[in-house]
Amino acid sequence: MTRRAKGEGSFAFDEKNDRWVYRITHNGKPYKLYGAKGASKKALQPRIQALQQNLVELDLPYLMKVTVGEWVARWLPTVKPTVKIRTYDYYEKFCRNYITPKLGMMKVKELTVVQLQEFLNLLTVENGVKGKPLAASTVNGIRRTLVNMLTVAEDSKIITDNPAKKTKPLKSEEKEIIALSSEQLRKLINIAGTKEYIYTGCKQLYDEDDGMKYLRWCTYYLLILAISTGMRQGEVFGLSWDNVDFENSILTVKQNLQYSSEGLNLDSPKTKGSKRKIKVDDLTIAKLKEWEQYQKEYAESIGDLFPNAENLVFTNSFGKPLSASNFRRGYWRKLSLAAELPEDCTFHCLRHSHATNLLRAGVDIRTVSHRLGHASLQTTMIYLDLLPDSQELATEKFAELKLF
Image (cartoon, rainbow, N blue to C red):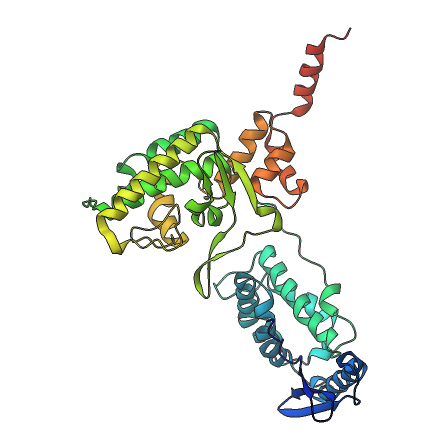
């Protein structure tokens, strides 16, 4: 049975009087509507709609005086069940750190386009909570939060028009896309297969126990999979053995491991297009089989200390989901230094590298887009700028036809 939403009300049938009764509680006060004798439940709908409209209007005197801070406190709990937890975390963080401190005392109905635009613009020059001005992309995230929050205020008739929608998003500086060459990727994998890199930056050597060894090999096989598939970090971390089809060499991307205010959790992928099947080459499949066997033997060696309840392909040494921050500090940074990767190279650059290497090899852009799980081809086309001059290649290919 579907649970009623808050404020939806409930029906009950009065058998004694042969009629339907509708009940709803608003702001702690109960309301009842009685249907006509013998009438259907549906016949009550016009009166229910009228009652709900009246209840909204009863709220209006209060809502006309509501401040931004009060509206934030009311809006956040209502939006939380309707969005992914990571989205809610962004909303909550932006409200707590910027919207409420700067706009909290202002009345919602008195907000103007100019005020909001000035507020957004100032965030790029004034120091934020981390002691420096915000990037344009972060400010645009705050703007989206304002738009969504004030859309609900508009629907609630606090305002007749949403001023946040009429503000202009800030122009973001395009970040340079770092894509590694095949030589750089090969060097990265080779170093990941050795023990020495784990001592990068360490003042003294230490003995590697079985758990540390497991994590080092976990990183090695994890990198191979990321490089050969272009999967997002959360998709790699969230991959289950249940979604590895060894017989047909296919991986099914169904879930994404994310860190949120509720801890590590497995969620659906980023977009609808992110749920996909990826064909994997024979060498990568062979490597995955090697890792499966290693993981099984390690798990058996420590028994109940390795539960792996989600049957994940990659885990920490106690069979729990990997922590992105621990992985970054303990392994990725050391590998980056040891492999002499570009300074700003992140794990996500492996995804860029997969795309550009496929396009250079002549794989069509639609296939690359599907492998990456992009929502549209437009997103994938950013990689075309990283390829050699296509005009020169086109003339060479046409000349090879020898038509005249």
